[in-house]
Image 1 (tube, each protein chain N blue to C red):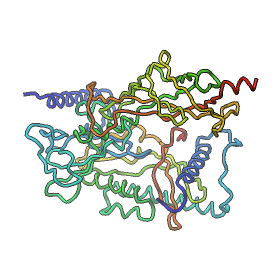
Image 2 (image 1 turned 120 degrees about the vertical axis):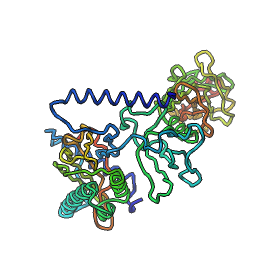
Image 3 (image 1 turned 180 degrees about the horizontal axis):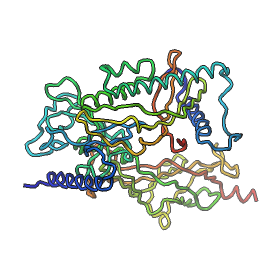
Length: 299
Length: 183
């Protein structure tokens, strides 16, 4: 019976064979000696190359990389830290996320299946004192996904935005002050892929701190039609922050709060322990607040 | 953390050294660029040139150690790097050598190193060179050859941070040449 895994191995073997044939035809006059398709040369550190065997060992033929094959794990997962997953009969621990940048990974066609990552693994081999340490394609076991989730989260970038207010320049005690945020785009941010995971952020709301001691305001993202409003009850003449014209004002600030979802092969996954929201850094503006009467006297 | 030299300071120094190396290596004829930083005058010229000479020697011996470690001739590859490299660099090299030994792979010959360039600023240094690995090929003990990456078959840049420890220079971590050094 051809299981999907077996099928992909067969396809890989055929691809490798065809590639080998084409290679042989293309360089027939060079008469190169046979080369083993399992071996590749990888730049493991800047300028430093290592020859790496990327094929599974014979003992791994059925179990698959994540020990997820039928019949449960085939290795002894009781000794820390080699208790993460099985590679055949080997009990292993992997560097997750991979220390190797994805641009340095072996060609994608050597990937045994979707959702694999290429990383460094250390394993205990039964009856052997020495550790088995190799660069390998592995399918991250379930427990590793949160780590990759953190990596994917780190690849989400919140946009640079600016904050302004109306009435522009200066507002007044008792008046409605509107906060405006520019630069939030369509409210969706998409991170680059981290191994099998990708994070997407959808703007949930904007938090605004008016800086007059009152609580933070939460606003709806569609600020053009639903600007956040606040009524200052104090003048700002005693504030130490100065606006561009040198007037003392409240250092109001805002940040964007995103709901984050993670997807693997297009399907949403739940990652325990990884934050489901992402906040942008605070960014603000100084808001001078005057009193109407005082303004009249000054004129 | 190595020594008392602040890390950011060291990075800055390495950065400056890189810039000067890049200027020297890439062969731009803009040699009189006023913005190019000169090594600081806090080190006397004699010491600086001594340091440079030492770094060259250490780097040369380091490359020899890498070649020997990967040739399969040594039972204790880590020992080859004693006094030549930092712990993390020794660990990486010993790891590669032991993986090669376990999988029956040896590298035959040696790389050709050219254009060695050294920059020293105070207690930090950077060495850059061009490495051609076309005469340093891997072989499986089964006799099969392994195809090197195309970059390895022509001179490609290698850049290392050099770290001073107990009065001697050690090869530290490699630095991304960033495509600015041409070989």
